[in-house]
Image 1 (cartoon, rainbow, N blue to C red):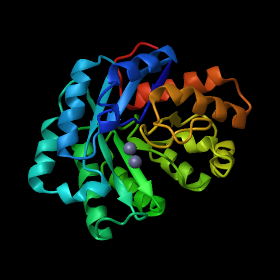
Image 2: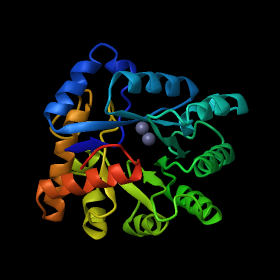
Image 3: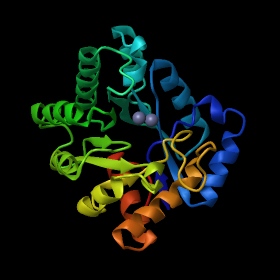
Image 4: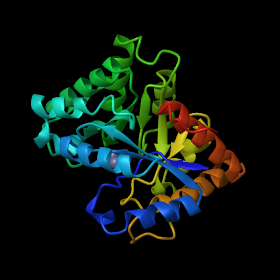
Length: 264
Ligand SMILES: [Zn+2]
Ligand SMILES: [Zn+2]
């Protein structure tokens, strides 16, 4: 059994055929889905979807590219979903210097504030970074240090679509954050195989980030959770282990991080 630790199934792209998408994923062995919202409205949509599909779980938060919706009121709306039985994380939150759509100090403030929200509710976070791994690692580990009671002995979150180096990953592991890898790990140009060889399997997860980041050989088409095994197979090849081992480890990690009510 695989878990897609990050897929945006509330997107328009899936409006017409979501039950099919979920069925195809399940046939491919992908049995659970973590769906991170990007603002207060998509949080409501994602929660509604989670009420329709038993193995669909949700993260709520305001994405760094959606900070036009960042306000006290919208943050209160986001917070109001915490406590719903299918809400398992705060996310996605983080920093994006590639598109730089909002001032950097505002991005950092929104990120720090939502880390605080996660700590207050003892939930893990799903962190988005782009050209910002260093600053995001700094802010997240600082939050972890200031909040020692936040998931002590457990996990505090994941840096998704991880693109940092092995040293950044090791720093995150030390502060009880995992990292996850999407389709681009299958691209010829990816530097992630080298990073994977150094950090190994222990603290990683797999994700599609659907509908984006379709893996080889389906580039150019809509991405779906059914492609998770392609990513796992590539990671297995890089590490010289059986795909079943990648499957077991990444699934156990997702169940532990999000405290999913799924028997292993
Ligand atoms: Zn992201
Ligand atoms: Zn995402």
